[in-house]
Amino acid sequence: MSQSKQPRYSPPSKALDDSVMCPTCQFKFVSSIHFDEKRNCHCAFDIELFENLEDQSSVFRTCFTCTETDEVNQRFSVLCPLCNKTFWLSVDLLKIIDEREIKIKMSFKTEDKNQEDKQRGNRQAVENSDTNQSAVRKRHRVKVFYKSSGETFGAAEDIKKQLKSNKFAQLEETKLHDCSIIIMFCPITSRVGSDVESSMKDARVSSSGKPVILVLMHHTRDPEYSTAGTNWSEVYGNVVLNVDVLFHETLSGLLTCRRNDDAFKIIRNELSKHSKYWA
Image 1: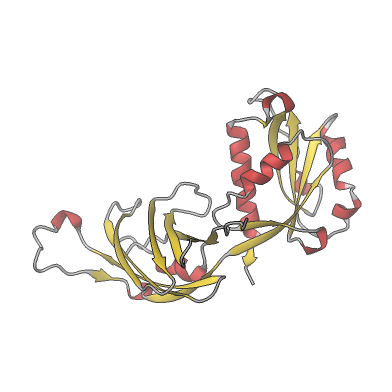
Image 2: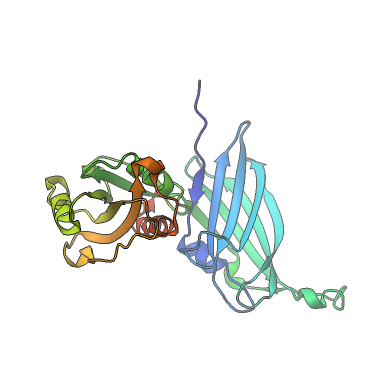
């Protein structure tokens, strides 16, 4: 049985970050385009606008489906969250170049919705000349090597699944020599300091020269468990981020809590900094 293709994602790029801009207040949106290959040469597109890279909830979202030979021209009404003015978002989808990238042309117009009736018949749209541009959007990818220094009762695998929901970069698990960044899972079994030291002494990690995200895993049932402690990036030069997560084997691994949700968000943001265009 053949496996269905995984959806491809187009994360923010400088070209489209510069073009998705409110003409009234000049606020620049972060844009994301998700596309999924369907049967019969059809592709489903999901376009989202965000206020910033860290946001998980978009301020605007629209979806449509087309074939590879279609030339799509659609217009949508978008409310700017800063100036509270509405502008038109016109989407011109030219074509799919190959399996890894698409070429998109976007232009944007605005008009005062409150005065639309008064100005009917004599309406003038304000166009931003900088937004009529084409851009090639490629999927970003970050290659990750995972290492665990102890038993996590499946919580490490749960974290991997959570991180795969990254909107702006595809995660690819690779060998150590091929990775862009290491995620070290460090279950705390005795004292934090000694457990971290033991994890960071791992020869493959300490001598790799690769940046490390250190995930301190605290074995507890308490979602309010205190994890305040050392900033390990000040101790180990290759640690670019350390976060704390809570887990317990009797609670199906990871606890469902705000602490863990915040940790996933912080890790995703750091991973996006180490992503590269899919070559």
